[in-house]
Length: 123
Image (cartoon, rainbow, N blue to C red; front, side, top):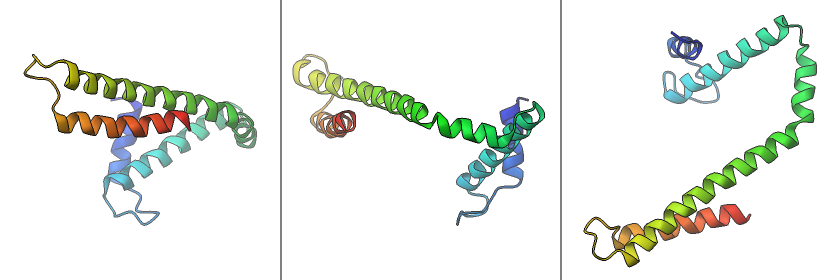
């Protein structure tokens, strides 16, 4: 049994109904899992000799880097979604002999999803 499954078991045993969540709901369990995970993380950091204030200051100082990395990864995900949408539309238009080609509704939905992915990439 790994660390994450152990923490998940504890979170399921005592879910956190905070922030207006229903007791026992998956969101309450996930919130309790995050609380347990970060509590354990900061206890380990304190035992290793790190001052929590210094760790928090380091995270604040590198927040721009984390934001940039997250933005690049998110735009890469949107680019992959856009590529799938393009392949779906091209398959619906040009692959007439294939009986399993995407239909009109699937192609139209792919155009809509692709539009939102494109807007997300260019913003």
